Image (cartoon, rainbow, N blue to C red; front, top):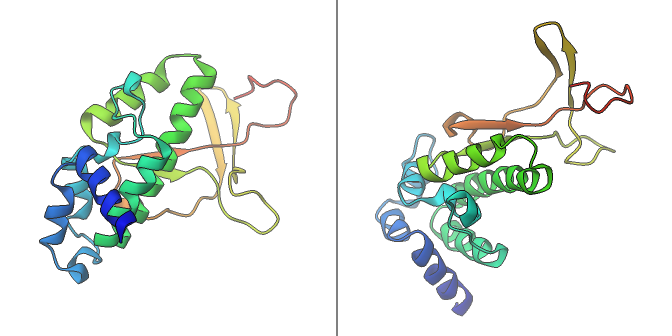
Length: 180
């Protein structure tokens, strides 16, 4: 159990008091819809865990994030799943922010997530046979007055409990990358 003890130490360092508060709630209650787990995670600053410090986050390394998730999962499996989906979405956003540096919107979004403890649900892709899990199933077409979005995306883990929804779409194949 040494690795779980280490995971709990890392979790306590980044999200002080979270595990103690989770342990005060019976497991069956923590695994029910509407449980207080996400609110406790938010109150402890959990949404900022993997966001780099340059964007007002905690800047946990991938190994540290896994350790925190392991510790949370031992207390509340559903919270571990929901927080993992949040971290996946946030990591995608900051990867775009690092690689694009186009508008600065990504920076403001990440800082807002970190400072306001917002949870992000993933709507990036759908797991379909023969298709990569990161390949969007939603497309977009620029029209007068905006963009028409078409396709389908099923809700993700605890999507109704999240503050923001992140999504991706495939632009039309016109050869012009600016078409959307």
